[in-house]
Structures are given as structure tokens and as C-alpha cells.
Amino acid sequence: MSGQFSPAFREELAALMRWRRDVRRFRTTPVPADVLARSLDSFRLAPSVGLSEPWRILRVETATARDLCQQNFRDTNALALDGQDGTSAQVYSRLKLSGMAEAPTQLAVFCDTATTKGRGLGAATMPETRAYSVVGAITLFWLALRAEGLGLGWVSILDPARLARDLDVPTDWQFIAYLCIGWPEQEDTVPELEREGWETRSSALQLELR
Amino acid sequence: MSGQFSPAFREELAALMRWRRDVRRFRTTPVPADVLARSLDSFRLAPSVGLSEPWRILRVETATARDLCQQNFRDTNALALDGQDGTSAQVYSRLKLSGMAEAPTQLAVFCDTATTKGRGLGAATMPETRAYSVVGAITLFWLALRAEGLGLGWVSILDPARLARDLDVPTDWQFIAYLCIGWPEQEDTVPELEREGWETRSSALQLELR
Image: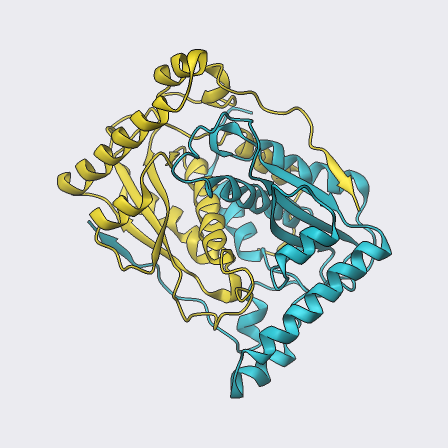
């Protein structure tokens, strides 16, 4: 393929972005290994600061590991609910914020903050760009999954230090995201938080000039 | 469009990811306003923690603002070169690490860490997810630009506090990325850092089990 893309492709790419959702309601049907493998290929194509490729991925499979992560979510979510007041708390308590109990495939994604790959290029004054590289790769993976009809839910209502400890990762690994993956129960172009009345999308992007 | 995507589309999406590069060599031809506007639409479709949409974008246009940013890059890059030793320093000094002198369009992207949008959902224990939302949006924008034939170069060799001060942004705005945008001088599927012998891409992604 040439690296040239047509207006029809651009339109379909925009549709992919419109249909991409943060999914919390999954069917339990397993994800075929080949579909997961080719979606994960997007990590190898992702940009990374200094070509440091700092992503480190755990597949969370055992009942023990999944239980620890779910308990972490439940405790952290209970504290977050305590932090909301009045009407907010009522709406918050009705939201389904994680598919960890159902999603057939679950990944915990970390950033190796001590990697020597890339020899520090681009990360001297902004070491956080290593974590950003991991986030960029997850974003490409998200699109690749959606193009296969699969949903991804990014859980961040977690105590990151406890999760790293429970999953027994090296101390230099920074927790970035817990990803639930599977076929969504429903498909929609409107974010679930908007459908549930929590928050709305802005209609326009404002650019300031300098 | 239905939200269903074909094998042919998935193949073209993978090609888009393969052709996406961090670009540092730009033609100076201006970017048409309509092409830039429709690429920026990807920000409005991007995921964000709690639907907080914390991205804040400055278009850096004036000679004064551009000079301040370029001087920041030159000073920071000189310090980074001092931090490399021997052979690394020789290779480093030959690398072109920014297109700030040529790129026709330049954006400074920030994260509003104090936004009340999203009412804190998902960011209580991991406030850094707001910055991650900005990074995810930039990643979608990068793909949208590439699908138009445009290149993006992400400059992180900058002193972020100095840049925020020079561009006079609110104190709660965290600097995320300086983006150079324009038509690339050349197109390639191999990262420039690999072509220049700085670092190589890994051939395989390793997943650990838990």
C-alpha cells in the first residue's frame, strides 16, 4: 500500500472514531486469539518517545489476579462515591463504571519508567512522555479493536500502587490503565456518561491564538 | 454508517498506522484551513476521563511566540546533548529533532488539570488520566492528519514550565505537547530514529500472564 488515503477512507476513519466508545457492558463470549493478536499489533506501530517502546502488558487471567483487581475497583469506587455530594452521588451510584466482572479479556498496562531503550531521547525534561507513549499505543489498540467489532473499557477507578503490588510488577513499572475487552452488549455513538446524564460533549473546539 | 467495518478497512487502518511517522522535515506550503479544521474534529470524538475534555489548544502563529518556543527547544536540546556521552553524543548531534523552524502550522497543547467538567469521575486516585485523555486525542488527530497526507512532529525537548510562562497560559494548564504540522518532505514506513541508527523497533510484543 502506498501511504495515500482516499476521501472514502477518511470518512470511514471518522466513523470509526465516532463509534469508538468506552465500553462497560460486555458479552462473555471469548475473544478469539487471532483477533486479539492482530489488534495488539497496533502497539508495535505506535509512536514512542525516542523509540523507547516503554509499554509493558500483563494479561490478567487467573481468578486470584482478577479478584484482587476487582476488589481494588470496588474499594476505590466506594471512596469516589463518598466524595460526590447530593444529586451527583445519586447519579454516580447508578453508573456502571467497569466491566471487570464480565469482560472475557483483561489487560493491565504499565510504563517502564527506567527503560534504557531510546537512550533517554526526548524524555530528559519531560520524563512523563514515556507514559504518554503508552497512552498513544493504547489509543491505537482501541481503534483496532473497534474495527474488529470489539469494545474496550478503560478502568482508572483504581488504587495504582495497590494494583502494581497485587500484580507483582517491578518497582519501575508505572500503572497506566486497566483494559476490559470483549464484544459490547450494545453499540452507540453517544458516550454512556452522556446517555446517563452525567456530562455532555462540547459542541465545538476552541483554539486560542498566540 | 453502521459501525461495522470490513476486512479491507482494517487493512487500510493498519497501513495508516504503518505510514504514520513523527515528522521533523516539513515543506513550508501552508495547510489549508478546511483540512486542518476537519482533522481537529478528531479531538471532539476522542475519549476523555469522565467526559472531562481537558484539552486546551493554542495555535502558535506570531513570530514572537514562535521565537520563544524555538529558543526553548534550542536551549533544552543543547542541555540534552551535553547529557549524552561518546558515540551517543555524536549520533545525537546529527539528528534533526524538531521541525519548528519550518512547519507551517504549530500547536501547543495543554491539559486543564483544574477543569470541573466530568465532576472528577475517574480521576480521584489517578488525576494523571486527564493528561492521558489529551494524549489520546492527539493520537487520533495524528492519524486524521496522516490520512490527509499531512505529517505531525511531537516536540518534547522543551522546558515545560518556561513554555507555559512564555505562552502566558493559566497556572492550572499542564503542558503536554508541542505539535509541528505540515506536508512532510518525504514519506517512509521506518521511523527516522531507526533510519539514523539511534534505536530500533522491537520485533515482537511480549505479554506476561497473571
